[in-house]
Image (cartoon, rainbow, N blue to C red):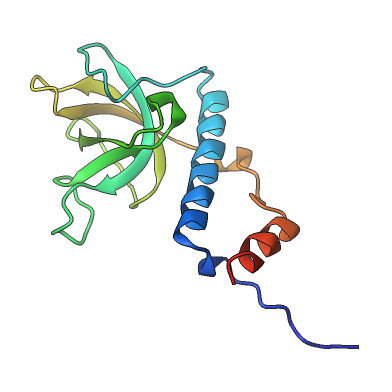
Length: 152
């Protein structure tokens, strides 16, 4: 009988493996938001209009020279298939919000309108996923072991 512990580390995934896992995570949260907000889809980043828009994406720092996320450099990145699978970015203007709290990489839905130059989204509301509806185990132990052993 062996007491050897099997090596198991999801942080040793290849770049492609990490990207795949991030896409799966985004898709899962995307579906949670669809149920939570009772919608079939979200608006396309590529189509700035003056009407109210509802966009989903990951919070990003739009200025790599600034290490901390701030109101001046906060943006949204969308990798959804609804946008043709292309990465789309937009800067967020948060002056209309009374309060907010974000972290880099957080998936949120923002509602608002584009500014007059069509370069920023003036955010009027932010939706965060209801954590009660997010499955606790994104991957089974067998799936994680399979992912990590494929990359050694």
